[in-house]
Image 1 (cartoon, helix red, strand yellow):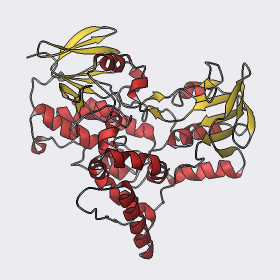
Image 2: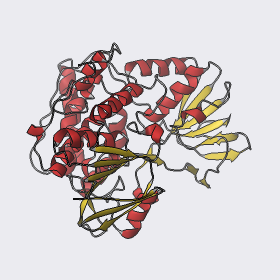
Image 3: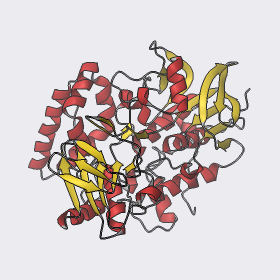
Image 4: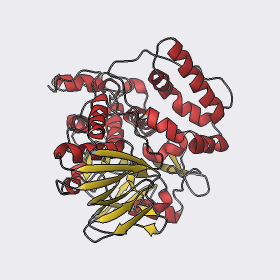
Length: 457
């Protein structure tokens, strides 16, 4: 038997949850897991939970953020026992959730799990398993899990081409050290108006009262807001047989109208669809998936991925004072003025100190700069899914090569599976994928899983 049973590439939330479920599912003393992560600062945190700003909140309540689908209260209980004073219905700081994942790993720390600080540059079949080449050497594994999570945003561009490398061009919205070094009286443009831009705006505007922020996106819309109070359950019956995007949209609108007639908010309808969203996506053929993306995706995202009420109140306050403005139409043109730039929008022109790329993660794997993904693409081991949402894979996370055939022994989960699963970027979906993958990789059943203690128990 090779020393490493499973190698997991990426120790963010997806990779960490995979490791946790493997260790929890299998009692095999010979199980060996190697977790590769090039950035020790993001180990077990990734992009989402690696923030150091406590004002960045989860956009889901604590009660549905458990790492374990069979123990739904685990995270809420952990937070209570850890002394944070939170309730299950609260929206906790994302860094607290990062602490939770790190604490879970600590509980399992031992000879079966090894974390390696290295960049994986290539993976190739070797001696019935795989040879893993990194910037620090090579190793072997029987199975591989690609848990590379979200990629850096696509480089900003206008009709005249990509924006230049310049001091005012901040290409990562997640680099808080650079973001907070902009002058206290700076004017900043955020390219994007989703949850990533919301976090950047909170950091910039709450730090100093002199800064000004302009958000710009194609539609010029902000994510909707969660209500303070809990909503009643509103399950939506999905008809049998093939589905169409227009048919599902009509059904949702009808359900929203029915809910309103019973005094129930539209959010309950969308939340009730969450457990069925992957099943609905699987029942769309390729044409219907594309129809959904071109016609309904934006509306779905702004209503589905909502802000915590506290965050929405802060954003509203900044807009009311005029320190935060929202613009539709996207970037028209950007003039490089040396230490700053002039940004031309559809409705105004602004001289700004910084332009921050908040357009969201790059999903088109063919444009990746990740050395491992580049090598696997060039060899044909991985290929983009037909819609360019991630990599081609089966519903079980098995990778498909450029001939459409399963690549034995290599799996993925989380954001790279969006083309197959659609909903695959939040913990409730990723933990389910990790649990199923762990059961498959260890040839065990869910009944063998070990119950997890909360902190302090």
